[in-house]
Image 1 (cartoon, rainbow, N blue to C red):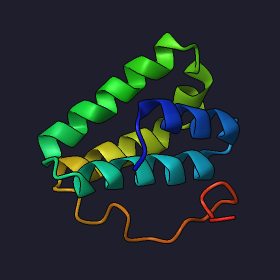
Image 2: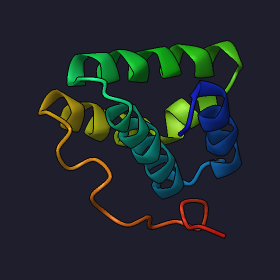
Image 3: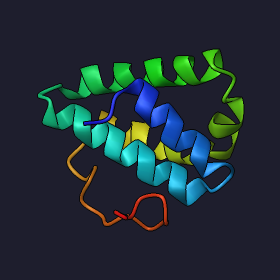
Image 4: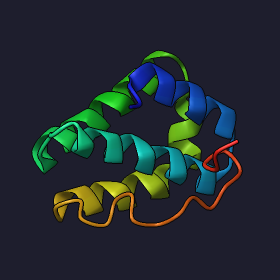
Amino acid sequence: MLNQRETARYLAACESDAVAIEDVLSVYLYCKYQRGHNSAQVMNKLCLLCCYLRGIRLNSVLEHGRQAFTILAAEVALGGGTIGSTPPRSAIGLPS
């Protein structure tokens, strides 16, 4: 299960790859649902992750992943039913 710190480490490794950022965010949000959080709590976790990324100076992840953050926030707002349902599309999202 991913926490904020681990997620930030994976997102930093993504650099400017928007697809990889979306893969990591999807796994992070999926983990939150698996821990029993509801959509409002998961949305709060996503907001806190954004604040954490700004705090540790990973603003570039927020800039390059803006579309992924927006799409995933919309999916969470709709209940999160599709989060985690697609296979990873980037090298960082694939198991080694």
